[in-house]
Image (tube, rainbow, N blue to C red):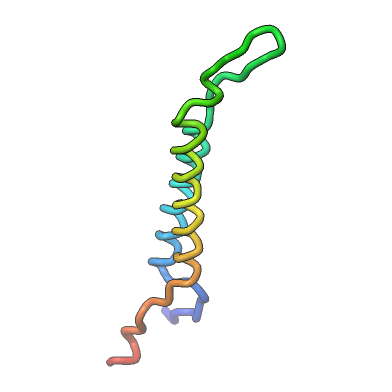
Length: 79
């Protein structure tokens, strides 16, 4: 079977999937109850939702950028 010359290798797709999973985890960490006009919910300003979740999302987006820019070494050229 002839290998096609794709822009991304197998590692790139794995890194992209891991980065996407990290971003999804960050958004899940942001979930929670909301406040309304009648009831104030102080949980909307919790450390998990305001500090940790955005940092996790940022790390996920950075890892996705690295996955796109990662160039695997060509093993076929050495043979």
